[in-house]
Length: 524
View 1 (spheres, rainbow, N blue to C red):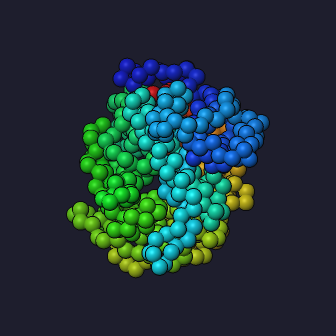
View 2 (view 1 turned 30 degrees about the vertical axis):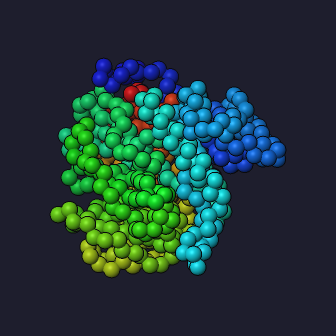
View 3 (view 1 turned 45 degrees about the horizontal axis):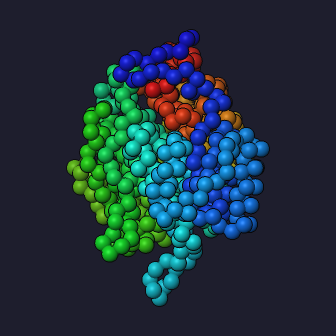
């Protein structure tokens, strides 16, 4: 079938912009050559890498960066030039902005803007940080990229790699802000909305009319000093809830990092103001900066539960009741966890939490017997995921992941004696999906993952029977971020991806009731 062109409200369709082989233009911004080398090693084939360093570092560090760039070239990256050192000028931020104007990247990789804690000084009551200059350079980089995005009017996507030795993660898996899943949603008016975190805040694309090919956007939504991460949750009424981290200046110096929440009630209309939920460690300028990224879910009673890792690497949560009232922060005691938190809602309407352990490859699960019940910790979860690969499955109560040893996608649910492999060990990152997809009178669950070159791959299995096997097919475009899938209330399935050029790409299923073929992708 020929490519479907978008209408005038969506902008011009770009032939080839979603095709394989397009190089992703990435600016690596680091404090020095050693940090830049670690970030370069995280880039896979298909990227064009330019490096900006604040400091020149030692001769050995510069040599290590040259080796990392040479290795990147051999594995399929483009390295069009050597590193630039912005610290030679007095104003680092201004120098970074000048370089970004020249490079015009749509993708930036930097370090974690919060210092890595190497220990805790109990006498002084403050954490001891490992190389805080790395975090300072990352904050300079974020400020410059925000300024560039605001000036250029084009989204810039940022990945902040955490290089924490005690996490035992490589740079690719140790992102401070997890990949956004379920970022394509349907509003109660039937129109789709795509949300993505960017350097300057949340960007949004909105479908002009239900099931149409016209789109509005990208639009930068108000939200100053939001960090480049986002959780997207749809409530039972069809309203979309967004959760992020916001950095605010602290009186007397330093920054606080707080969890914030906003809601979209009508497609294309302004969000509510961002409401602060505070921090699991409020009032402490050091501890609030080191909290994890929030995840959330709605239970059958209409309660909205928000979870985050706290400073002590246990889990904290707040609950909003249907009348809008919020509880204080509560702490779940138990196994220390990393930042991989995932919420799953069961068929009984209960929210469960999964988290990857901090000091082992295990997964821990928290559940409760009903709304308001006590939380119980379960350490017998029988799978070990690749860091950053867990996500809620398409059917209630299920969790998707990639196996740590094989990289093969798998699915598990409480009561299952063992996880079920789904096939397709290529690719990386989390999976997503949708349920209730009708195929010739049968109901199927859809699963979407990335392929070896980042392409979107779609699988399907009979609902309730993943053991019967999954049929996988290449959906025909590459995505630089996890793809998304939505089944509308009318049965239409839509896939969404982000191209190497940073554009939204869309494909619609050819039929609501038969086959799993998709029309040609078009870019917004």
